[in-house]
Length: 486
Image (tube, rainbow, N blue to C red; front, top):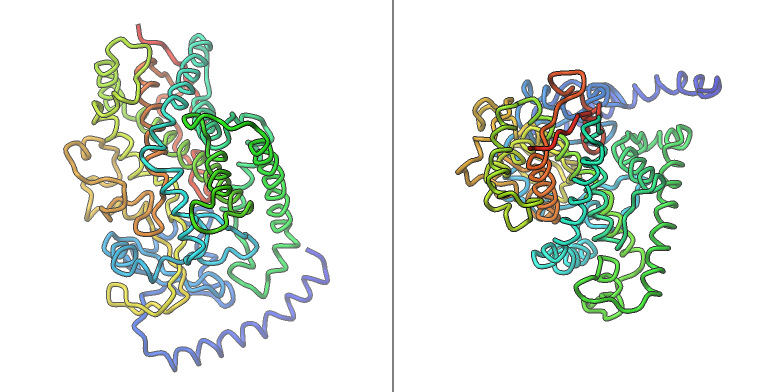
């Protein structure tokens, strides 16, 4: 920080504090609203200083004091934090339309599905995804891609000949390759592509000063955050431009072999949706699939594997189910997955404890509304604390423990209808790619335990430390020796 900037900040602070207290006094004297409980806040920054290095854990701890509906202030932005299933139900079901908007992410400009503001544009984008890309029929049509990539995964682990393998890296690679082949028609296993994905997720999860304190937006420029965003999106734009051009120039492909780019270009050409599908919209949808699909799938799968390694009895139970289901075949195929209830229970329990995005993607209220009796003003951002809800001791017995059996013969699912378990959200803005993500994870995990026993390298239990961002990753990779079953 330059000397001039330091002097400017020191001179400005007294005025900022005075204005803040004057505004707070006027607001409190005028307002008679029944607002949710709030922790004490500081001038200018609000409660930002209380979030620390792990915001979702800090907010979970604060909710124990201030309750399941808590109003905090991040800079100048009021933020409602919902940490109970009752609060989530009111926001995502009772008042779903009012909370269906997404807040502006400042210098992030999205024309996709996940981050687009609620309105006609978002409805058009979602209809494309639901009807043409992520329908049950379309997901099933890519079964051959998933099975081919998992066969290659098994082969690569076997080639290691019981030497140490980085299971985290392999899991990320297989989910990435499946998604790239389905989306773009080719693998994206180069370092440049992985670097773009990693940097995009890091930037999406990074703190933007201007997002919460608009008057200090220049800090994002000085810190380089804004420049990094422009750089990575320029790279992605050029990459996707080449992919689209390559698809536009190739001969017509078989209906059965079409990837997502082929489908979107066909929609654009035939105008089947009744509105023009512009190239920017195509790129945004592709970016949504590539960034969101790869990271969340591999992250949730990695946490499931880590929990199994921590709980040998659960691993043994799952392996036994896999061995019975596999019936000495070379691999477990997708049609066999319905015979594996314990597999599904393991993945559900991992999602309950480790929601890929613990705070989901923020919502925003578009009008004044009441939630659990509290007044929520229009324009309030909303964070749904999926992890706090999934670990709520009033809803889950032994809530902090990994117990897959709790989901056996249990109708609770992750599809957004059971509000005590919403790792993918609920309501209008629920993730539309749930089925695609979970069939990949089920197939990968089923075959890993079917083909191998795993022994951790140099330790009895995996380190469960976290790295925070838009999704919460394991800090350290899972390093194992993979021993084939006899």
